[in-house]
Amino acid sequence: MSELVEIHNLKKSYDKRKDALHDLTLTLPRGRIVGLLGPNGSGKTTLIKLLNGLLVPDGGEILIDGEKPGPSTKAKVSYLPERTYLKNGATIRELLSYFQDFYDDFRTDRAKEMLAALRIEENARIRALSKGTREKVQLILVMSRDASLYILDEPIAGVDPAARDYILRTIITNYNENATVLISTHLITDIENILDEVVFMKEGRLLLQTSVEEIREEKGKSVDAYFREVFAC
Ligand SMILES: Nc1ncnc2c1ncn2[C@@H]1O[C@H](COP(=O)(O)OP(=O)(O)OP(=O)(O)O)[C@@H](O)[C@H]1O
Image (tube, rainbow, N blue to C red):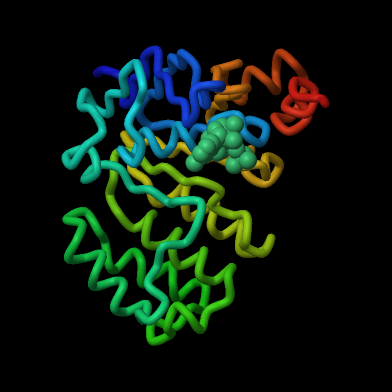
C-alpha cells in the first residue's frame, strides 16, 4: 500500500522575498500519530493549509491517498484549524446534526459519548462556552469522523491539563488503525507519549523526520529535550 500523504518539492511564498515553504519533500505513512514540530514561523500552518486545499502551492505537489487536495480529499481529511470556526449562535446539538448531514463518516454516538465524558451539555450555545470548552467541542467534532487523515493544528493549547489527558486518550482511541493523525503543537511534553514519529521543520524546510523511539533510544532524550537542543536560540 502506498503512503497516505506524499509531498514532493512543495513551495509556497506569501511574498516574493521569502518562502514560507521551500522545496519540502515528506511522506506520511498510514496508521501513525505524527507530531509536526518547529519554531514559530517554520511553516507548519502553511503546510497544514496546503494539505487542506485552503492554499494553493507555488510549486511541487501534494498527494493524499493518491489525489491532489480538493473535494474528494476533503471527504477523507478531518481538520481542526488553529482558530475556532463554530457558529456562535448554534447549540452543540445543532452542530452535531450539521456535521451528521455534512459528513457521511460522522459518528454522532461517538461525539455524544465524548461530550458526556467531559460533562458538556448538548443544549449549550457556543457563545456561552468558555474558550477551552469551545476548543474541546471542536476537537470532539473533528475526532468523531471516520477519516483517513486527521490534521490537528494546536489541538490542546486552550484546554486545561486534566482535560488534555482525556483529549489525548480520545485521539488515540478514536482513530482507526489505517488512519494517520498529524498534530502541530508547541506543547511537546504533553503530547509526546502518544506520538509515533515526529517531523521537525525549520525555516520552511524539513529538518528531520524520525520515530519517537529513535530519539529516546539513540539520543537518550525526550522529544521535548531533543527539540530544545536542536532549536536552541
Ligand atoms: N498570510 C500570510 N501573509 C504573509 N506571510 C505569512 C502569512 N502566513 C504566514 N506567513 C509567513 O510564512 C511563514 C510561515 O508561517 P506559518 O504560520 O506557516 O508558521 P508556523 O510554523 O505555523 O508558526 P507558529 O508556530 O507561530 O504558528 C512565516 O514567515 C510567516 O510570517
